[in-house]
Length: 117
Image (cartoon, rainbow, N blue to C red):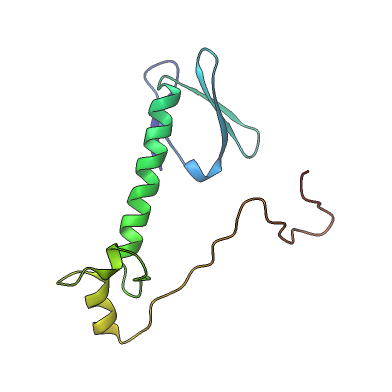
């Protein structure tokens, strides 16, 4: 979650950045959610983007610290106490592998829905 401030300046609220479809700055910063709901906030467009990037970095950092995390990158190749390499040695398990899907790939969706063109 990222914490933002409503335009009234007093109400702070948390929002899941994974549910933000787009952000406008005209002139107030408006977040449009995937369900169509809109939130107008005091933070600038750049500030909101920075908060989202920092949130995602925290998620990735946390994921690399979990036992069994994939050691295929620089973070996973570090050895020593509390690292992915040590956790794998203790657990005796192979790392978990994730698939990356390009956003333009056509994926099967719910029945009756077609991909956007």
